[in-house]
Image (cartoon, rainbow, N blue to C red; front, side, top):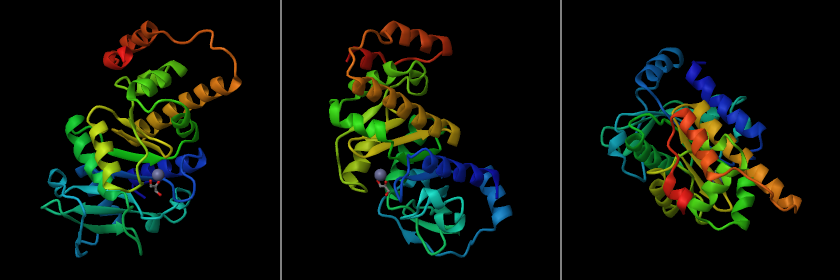
Length: 271
Ligand code: 2HA
Ligand code: ZN
């Protein structure tokens, strides 16, 4: 398999192994570079005669682009074993209104969240200056648990995640967006997520999960993994019933960011 496919498969397997993607929970997509496309076409062979299927979204910004995407209803647990039916490579047409399957997705189609993923790619392509290529949705348990006991506000969640583990601020210095409970796969959820992705690379879906983006699989997966680890520390501290005697101060968070040349979102610190 081409290295880029191996990377995608590994992210899916790791998501399952870490308990982020039970059963058919979660989905992922990757916006390919021209080099990825050339290598995959050479090694896998593309069906250039495949027919086009209309999308339920219009994504002119992504016209002609290629994506690796998980299949509708696929299990992250099975991606490694049944790669060609669990994921595939699709191309968007010149109008940004249809897609065709060039490889994989055998007897299947892209995830039901494909429209939401494409809209998210549009937002991050612009917001990141063409840097962000991965979209990953997961169901991390501690972060989901937090959405039952803390106000659903960007500033509240950002500060709690930053303060619960020293290096969390490194992966989301801009903070974390929070979206209220909305029906999975709905247009409302896609719209709210996209509006948060203009500012953030991680969006919490209340009582449901997390949606992250990043430049690479390591970047996106690492962001999700770190946020969940910090959330799990916070929930352990809360569950201990002990009084919190000390935590990481705002100035300490600023110092961590300064050392790496990152800029912490001061608006959230104040909020
Ligand atoms: O089943 O997780 O939110 C896939 C999902 C939808
Ligand atoms: Zn989900």
